[in-house]
Length: 413
Image (cartoon, rainbow, N blue to C red; front, top):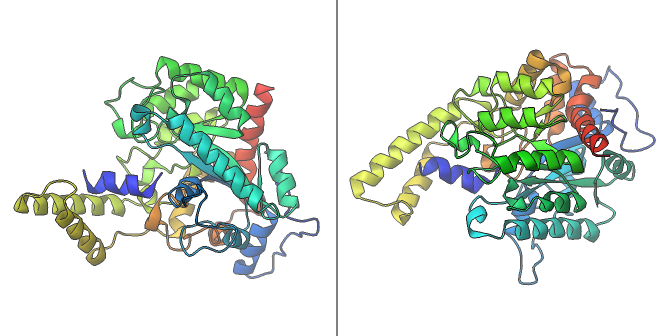
C-alpha cells in the first residue's frame, strides 16, 4: 500500500532459517525478555513480505535518474535503511514493485516495473557489502551468512503484466517472486478489494486465470492481498500451489474492512498450504481507526458544503491539515499485531502466518513499538510473553513464507 493513495482515498471519499553468522548461539532462556528478544531477532532469519522502499526511492529521483536518498546509510525519513535493518535483525525484505492503478489505463505499467527493478539492482550493486538480490531461499540464506540484507522482489499490482501473458515469464526472469494480482482498482486480472461486491469480473477474469496458471508454471507466488473476497477465493482455488497474502490482516478485528481477510478465507488460504502475512498499519489492526475515518469524512463533507468548496481546494486541504493536528488518528500497538498473529494461529495453526509490515507504505499509522525495521524484537518480546516458543517465532519470522516459496519453485521445476 502507498500512504498517499490510501489516505487520499479515505479522506476524499519451511525449513529452519539459517543464522546470521557461524558463531550465532541460541539466546539463554534466563536472559531478560528484552535482551532475549533482541538476540533472537539476530539469530533467526527474518523475512518481511512487503516493504515499499522502491517507490519511496522513485519519488526522490534526481536529474541523473538516481535516488537522492541513500538507504545504505541511516536516513532521516522512511521506515527502512541498512543500519536500522541490522538493528532489527531483518534479513530479507520483499521490496514492493508498486504500480499505481492509473497506469493500467494510461499505459507504462510494465516499463515502470522494469525501472523499479533496475533501481533496486543498482542500489544492491552500489553497496555490495550491505545488500544483495535474492532470487531463492538459498540465495537469501547465503546472503545472511555473509552479513548482507537481501532484496527479494514482489510486484504490487498485476497491471504490470499489461495484456501479455509472456510478461509473467519476463518478470520471473527479472527475479520477481510474487505478484499481487490487483491493487486499489479492478484490472485485467480481476476485482480489487475496493470494489467488493460490485466488481468488473465477479472475481478473477479469464485472463487472470491464465496468469495464475502461468505464475504456477514459472515459479512466481500468487499474492492474494488487495483482492475482493470472490477474487481471493477463486485465486486460491485456481492455484495448484500455496498462495500468500503478503500484507493483509484479519477482518475479525475490523468488520467491513475489505482489505483484510475474513476467517473463512484465512481457512481457505491455509487449506491450500498458504500464509497470511500480517500488515502493521493501524487501519489494518484496530476498528478505532475506521470510526475516526468516518468522523473525519463527515466533518470534511460538512465543511466543504458550508463553504461551497470543491475536491482539491487549498482551503479544504488546510482544513484537513488542521483537523489531523487537532484530532490525530488512533494508533495501534505492537500488541495488536500480536493479536492478529494469535487469531490466525488459533484459527488455522502456526504454519500459516507471517510478517508483511507494509513499512514505507502506511505512513504515520504504524503502531507504537513497531515504527520501523529496527523494532521487530519488540514484536518477538510480546510473542515470547504470550508463550510462543522460539521455534514458533522462527516459523512466523521466515519459515512459513520460505516453505511456500520453495514449494512454488519446486512445482515449477
